[in-house]
Length: 431
Ligand SMILES: *Cc1c(COP(=O)(O)O)cnc(C)c1O
Image (tube, rainbow, N blue to C red; front, top):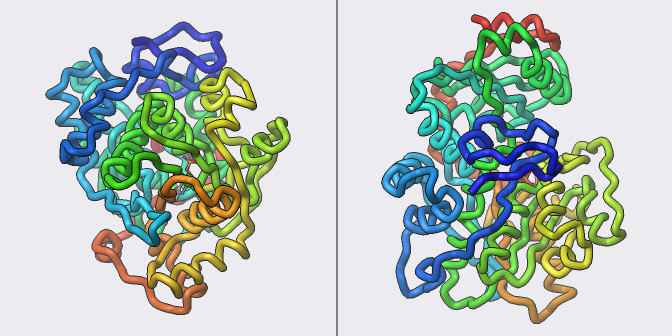
């Protein structure tokens, strides 16, 4: 199956091409023209399927003829090699903990699968590539750790000086010699601009094989469909589920919508945002108005122009009424976010990060309006320790430190300071 661009102007490409180039030449996002149905054996809960087995049954639907079964099993074994447990908070609400990977955020799922898939496609070519990523925190560290150990791949990360949390900076700068972390004297927008400039620079195009690992890459989307099925398998008593998804670029939400279309029994998807809420606003008013982002406690969702909105539009043929049947949206303030973090701690002795908190707010609002709705699974997208200072201040207690964090504190931070201009970046890339 070839992939097509959501802007319709580019020639369809193979999965391999789509994964390697990220964005389509016409500026659109690569998408599957048809979504296959999920196999019946996956949906039969009496089968006692493991996470890697579920991942295989789901991703095979997309990769089909392009990656042989045994190779796909290897890719899954090297990428989805951590637990995704579910935590029940009450009879009608659970949290799916997607943050037990090496960098403690759900971005590990997509980034690790993408890295293994790129590595698989490269093996057959024996060329060297450089993965270039601009990051505001989670994406860069997930990519850095995901590509570590893959032969023939170098990673160059750009992150804004003073723009990431202390723990995020440790994750970014301790991944080892394969990863070059550049601390840019500027903002996240400057980092993104530098990446775009590098991709069109004639000298770089000639001399370096650059790959983009940003969040629109279709490989990430494929991996992210897996855990919706996994949540279903972990909830044998519930024939239907409602998901509450804390959203920024809408990648997670899009993956869930694809699974719903493919036959997973999802009654509704809740899109839960902070005050950066163009999608909930669209669902309410029918107008999509991108705008500059505003800083919030849940900073990975501070996105004013979500790129995966194009894929959402594609899935529903641009029909608002159809989208509303599948999705409901809400947005919440930092004050509400802090309040629910404290409440969940007091009532359940359970520590949550600000993004997961927004998902729980979404679940709460939806339940109020739909008291009879099916069991709600809120996606837990980051470990609370990634936002240690904020969460400890809110709950007035210390957080437990997971082993991933202890590990990075024993390592030396290695980075290079660069100005926010292409010259410094080029020096590093041409190395
Ligand atoms: C990236 C991120 C999100 C938002 O996910 P999207 O797929 O961009 O909507 C939510 N929570 C955390 C912790 C993230 O890092």
